[in-house]
Length: 391
Image (tube, rainbow, N blue to C red; front, side, top):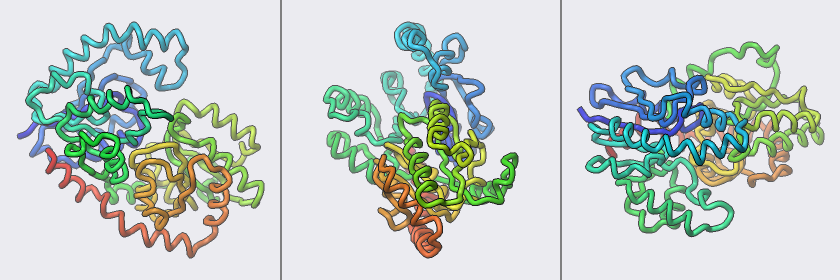
């Protein structure tokens, strides 16, 4: 029996964690001993932890609350500057030794180490003799910032060179990585994220409770973490507000998700006069019931990897409007054949797209029919075979 160690720095409620859970659930415990290494124990913030299969051994690297409280504050978006400096300058002195000891212990008998967010890169010397696989979940170019930073580029290339295989989760990301880092081209593999479509369909049938008749009203939905450093929910709110004021659309907007930008976005909804039209539903362990009952699924982001929520929307037969950010969005929506693509941050175009699509049944049906051609690529049964081949 082979021992597989997955590693992730923090275990929150994002798309990366959901993809990881699906992989853990799909691996046969009769074939593999599976361990999950988590960098920091964030306790009550780990709201998806109950979905980790029982056969998976969970190990924390930093478990002491005295050493994790700054990480928790930062995750919640309410860390002060002095606390931030404390977390970045002083705490690492104590944490580094812990990381070395725990990484060595957790991976001691591993055959394969899968670094799900590349945060084990500084400890690659502890992983000699093991197959090392790294996942890249986002556009590698975004690490450079707005301008090409040669130092950051070379640092990332050196970090990735320590892995035997680098998994990119869409073709666009693989092509981009090969162009940016030609020396890594032979290590790059494209492996789509997997989804359990049967589970999604089953969960989507659940009723929506506690939102005063919302299930009897038409609404649009956006599902994702409220974090403006990556997402662009602000532009989505503005586009929706414009559509309401210009075209008098009656549908409500539901934002499913939570994050550090929530208060900022609630203030924006107030400023736009949309507090009675926009519902902040918070984190929902079952977002599929919201997606199934929504008229449209709306998606706005500055950069991505392979946004799972778009695949889930197509699997539920929902029409989609999304920003064509790097990477994965255009690929999932078949370059406009399976949904409307707009330029990131273009409020006017997004607003016009909402107005054009929300009552156009013919166009909606066309997008949904086209999407069936790509959905099979993301089915858990086909993806897990390719994943196991890499092991």
